Each structure stands twice: as structure tokens, then as C-alpha cells.
Image (cartoon, rainbow, N blue to C red; front, side, top):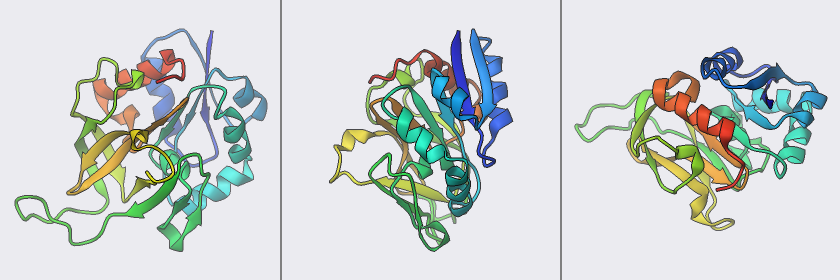
Length: 218
């Protein structure tokens, strides 16, 4: 039995992710929990998140999820989603600056106001809706997903990996709004995405399906 835990620290689209996993009709044991024993015993972890990073990090530390993720980072496949991805960075400029988990080198930065697309139309913040993801590295998590497929985004901040600390192959996917930003990260047994796979229809379900069979290697 494939034991999958969606980590519950009170700040994520937990039931949407759970329903998407159940829709795949795979032989899994699914738990949505902050129970340390279940998290440690899981074969795979999904780390979602929505809302302000300050509140997320407060709850992550209160539930001791930071400790559990540090333990798991070399042991099992982990999928970060949206603010869960941002929380994996070292620092976010949101809320006047917040220290994050430091699982990936780099920061979280905000979209600037007054952005325009190629036609001169104003781009809104948050970046909300469907957008293309360009696959910038080969990875098992992209299996059966065409390059530049569209995924669903809702975010005002994006991650900026520090390529001086780690090879730029850390960037697994990129998106434009209007400049290019990192929309997927990969390092060893961790894969993280800025978009919401649970809201991204067939491509999102395929990504989740890939996660259920991924062995944590690139």
C-alpha cells in the first residue's frame, strides 16, 4: 500500500488535493494530518499552502512541520504546492520579510505593480488563471505532460532560486508573467510547483499521478 500524507498545518487546499488524489483511483492509503507518526511512516508527502507566508511559517513551526520536513528531505518523495513551495525557500520578502525553511537556496519575491503584457495591457496581481509551464529540465514528474502545457496559478509572489549556491538545474519549470519566473523546482527527492495541480485538470492529475509512482530520483 502506497501511504500518502497531505500535511495539514491549517493553511492549504487540503481537501481539493485529497479529492484529486482519490480521483486517480490508485491503490493508496491517504491521510490529511499533522500527526508526526503518520508523517514519518508515510511513503510520500505533499506539502501544500495558501495565504500569507508569515501565517504559514507560524503554523508550520507550531505544528513542528519544519522538523518533520527536515527529517524527510532525504528519505522520501516530497511535493510542495504553491505557498508550500515558497516556504521551502530561505527567505520571503512578503510581510516585511520572513525566514522560511531553507530547503532550497533563494528567496521569494513579489510581482511588481504596473506590469504590462506584449500588447500593452495591464497585468493584474495576483497572477490568477491558466498559464504555460516550460519544462527546463527532464524529470520523471513531467512524464506524459507535454512541454508548455497550461496549469492553474493563483499567487502574488514567486521564487527566485540562488544559482550561486546550487546549479541552475534546480529550476524544473518556467513561466512568463510578463518576465520569466521559476514555476517548478527539483532537487533530489523534492519537487515543488507554484501552480495548483489539483485545479489544473488533466495535466495536474497527471502530475499527481506521476508523484504517486516517483521514486524520488531525477
